[in-house]
Image (cartoon, rainbow, N blue to C red; front, top):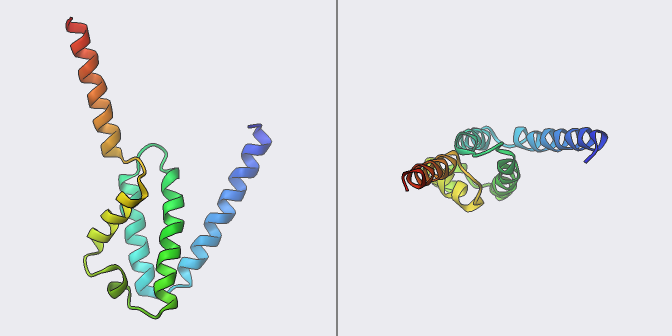
Length: 118
């Protein structure tokens, strides 16, 4: 990818992010609160650059918008245990998490050290 293409993609990605955030800001306050908390949760556990999490956030916005469109209270829609909802949503995305990164790093270190013992 050329430098020009890279910057064009970055600008396009920013435009998409801003458009998605406008959708969130148009939601009722209770939905905005749940979105922001789940967003924080997902980024807290995001592995690597976290960029794969962004696609998941767009899915979350679509999901929440369905609840808004159907006039369902946010806690009736996602459940009263928002933490559980966030974790289930994170797992459904099948993205890497920092815990997996740490586990894989540990696994590699152990095998490297054991191989040096031989």
